[in-house]
Structure formats: C-alpha cells, structure tokens
Length: 176
Image (cartoon, rainbow, N blue to C red; front, side, top):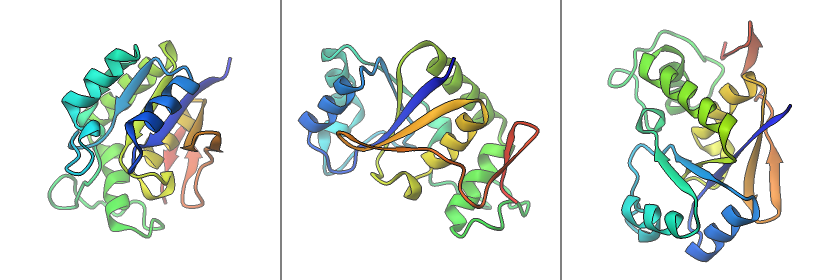
C-alpha cells in the first residue's frame, strides 16, 4: 500500500484559500514544521488562530518544533562536512541537523508514524517546496516509501523526487 503525505507552504494565502485546499484533499491532520509558529503579517497563520480555524474544519494540529528550519552551523549543529553538493549553507546545516540530531530523528519518526495513521499535510511558510526545508523532510519520507505530494496551489501539485544532490544508501537519504 502506497502511503501519501502532502506538503504546503501557507505563503500569503487567504484563510479561505488555505482551508479550501485542506478540505479538497480531505486532510485530517496538519503538522506544522515552522520553527516559530507565528506570522507577523498574516495573523490567521499564527498558532492560536490556526488551531482555532483547523478545529472548526475538523483538522487536527501538531506543531513539531524539532523539525523547524533556520538551523545554523556553530549554533544548532556542527559542520561535519556533509552535503557539500547543497549550494545553500542554511539548507546544508538543516540536512546535517536532521542527520545528526537525536531529537530531530525522533521527530521524523513521529511525523512518519502520524502520517501512516491519518491523511497528513506538512506545513511551513514558503510556497515553493524547493526553497523550503520541508524538501529535506520530504526526502526522509520518500526514503520510507511515502509518496510525497507538494501542493503548490489548488489543483496544482508536484510529486516529490529526490534532488540531484541526494541519494539513497541503505534506505537512508545521503547528501554527499
């Protein structure tokens, strides 16, 4: 059985557009992977407002802080030289963080476990998945035999594939 997971960047979407997307895909649970679950400019994406809105449309909400982005070498993770083919230092730091941080690995396992039980969407701020750290979460899920679908807009999707800078070794994503 193929297991599906959706991803979505809330970007500057209206609340109406956002909830319509969730309902269109029959989403049962939203996993928020923002490091800081707030939005200065779009208050409907701030934690308390989002929890309330999702409750009204019968979608569960879980914030997984350990999977939040904006990780830095020297602060959040040690630069051990992995991922040299990843151009963005921030993305390289995040990939290293996911690979080496025990709490992040446990959070990935928790995310996969939830996604096996409910129709799941992973949400962050950035609309484009290739410009967002959720691409690395998607790589992990891909390595666990999930089919990851990035929702760009209502009716516009992108099926996840490993990026050029990633490969699978012994069922683990590696960034050489």
